Length: 528
Image 1: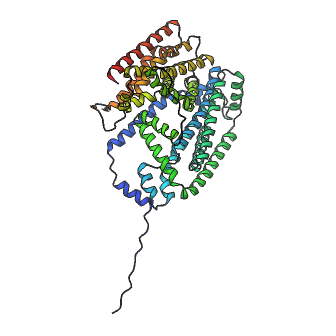
Image 2: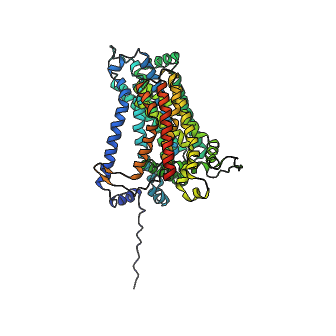
Image 3: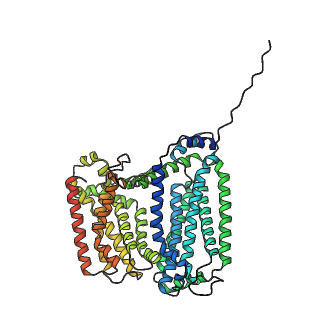
């Protein structure tokens, strides 16, 4: 009796494509999800088109006739600076979030398997490339639109004619290629903390220089003439060269990234994927508290603080002193918010081409709220931990009133700086505008309410309405923004109409005092 030879079949290792196909077959996605995503994109597209309609109109013939006006020149210089600053800011945001990240499931499961690391990163790399291409193409077209009235195409003989379509295509290609190359370079240095710090510093420096140039152009005729002269000297060869160089750099950078993807460190991917996933989830649900704690945890982890004695102040002010200490220990975010005080003036010159408007008013409210939120750490902690608040032994109403001093001061200071910049660059006339910084306490009421809002609970969908669910946490946050708008209504009305006086200052003082006083009275009595 002879034994037959036994054959052993070796199974081929599963590929990433096979695993993703298996997951896709068992994933259940309702049509409501697709409808919600499509509706959100449609609404975003409508509002985005409305905002970009003014700068993009400079590409047609109607904008060419205004090339000789000072307003058109000012819009060109300011818009070019804003486009460069926006690109640098987006690259900085991409470096903070990744830019190469995985979904939570992939980072906790597929990343730890023996599957090909390059295959796992293929889908997120493609998603990043598509996003960078779209954003870069839009920035390239916007840059061309800013320079539109001053460009002289060989085939354009009459003033008011449209620019050649080839210039539009080449600008989009150059912008997309530059953005692709920058994102790939950021992904290459993603595993190294020191290299990432250098990239962030470079992006921040470029954004500051671009914004400084845009702000300097508001009052410098020589700078405006120099920039517009550069725009007027551009030719088809320049656009072609820029597009070719940008595409070549993008191809080279992504080739290096493809080679490095095979041995990409898993530790960097896991940490960045977790941080970006939490940040995107918090941003989608308007959970500003979670975004704040993510930033704070990333900053203070592993740091040691010097112990200092408590100041000799009343009990309520002693409790609120922790917010002042935090601001002094971490002035970086506050400095960034302070630099953003120039944005209202730049937005008016670049997008609307006029000194006032709803866009500038919205920028003032948003900037003031961002500044005030830097001083609401204690108020947010009181809401998150009621036990700790009771252990302090301080009356809640007095503690809240003491905590309101710092946000009110920050909001007022930011508004004063922004309202000094606006008249200084000629966007608004008169010397009453800085006094309208008295809207700060009114905005601080909305800031405090926003900081003390209960944490987001995605499971609480709220009652059904004809337009969908109305979650209480979303309604509460919108009410907080409405409180800030009400508290600064005289300022916003004056900015929209373009003139202010002593009556406006007096009414703003009364509105701020009434709104903040009513909020502190209600919040102190109800604890909300």
